[in-house]
Image 1: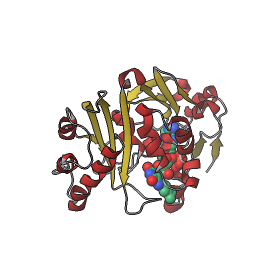
Image 2: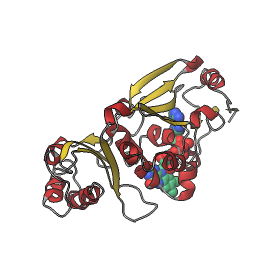
Image 3: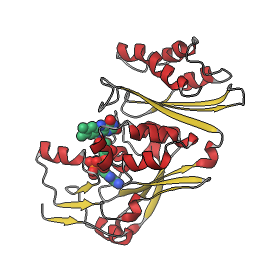
Image 4: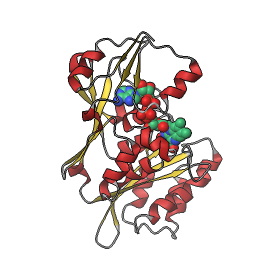
Length: 277
Ligand SMILES: Cc1cc2nc3c(=O)[nH]c(=O)nc-3n(C[C@H](O)[C@H](O)[C@H](O)COP(=O)(O)OP(=O)(O)OC[C@H]3O[C@@H](n4cnc5c(N)ncnc54)[C@H](O)[C@@H]3O)c2cc1C
């Protein structure tokens, strides 16, 4: 490696981005990248570390909006968002990532940029209608929908000299909604998702579902909404002991070739419904 840039401000970051090439690498928490570098013996011409720009770590929550810096770790997301009903799914997803060590280092930016099909935060960011603010060379910024970040082939649509600065969620559109994330893995802890279910419900005072959103991860290369499940939920009480979970599970049919995931979907929905009691 010929050089390593460690900018301290957003201004310095913009300048550093001018020097990135297709052989350069961007380092966040390193939980994915360092393994990848070791396994493939990668020798970047330049390593850009995002670790020392304080602005990239900030999490700001107002009644109108939440802004989460790309370098916010999973642990910081849990601390800041756990208990906030409309944003609970983000805290759930971050709390279920890897081990405490991974959660203390792994960032939301790395999770989304890595674009793994099994990543836990992207389905939630889709569910909540997040946007990603992106910086390019010289500090020019643009904003895209989170849906436009993955390229559908386990990569992302960022140019080689662009970084994600932060994620923005419009909370005005989430007023009255509660959200949860439930994951199915092969183990109960430190497990990669086989199904990641992000669900948000708007209920009346009686608990009847007025509106529903469901986004599924870890099944296809990118998260996808499940309109049939949303339709089933509307007008119902989210009772996990009723037939509703079975019917919801059946909406997975045709979305996966893995029969066990079709069967397991019922239990995952049941766990999600329990959270809305
Ligand atoms: C043991 C173990 C368990 C894990 N368990 C889970 C799990 O349960 N759920 C899960 O979702 N993931 C899991 N992961 C994967 C990983 O920890 C997460 O994806 C983590 O969030 C990655 O963030 P990072 O900061 O470490 O990214 P890094 O490893 O630093 O970077 C990952 C990739 O994203 C790029 N990147 C990072 N930040 C930016 C940015 N701001 N702008 C542009 N590109 C960027 C990097 O260049 C690199 O290509 C696990 C990993 C390990 C090793």
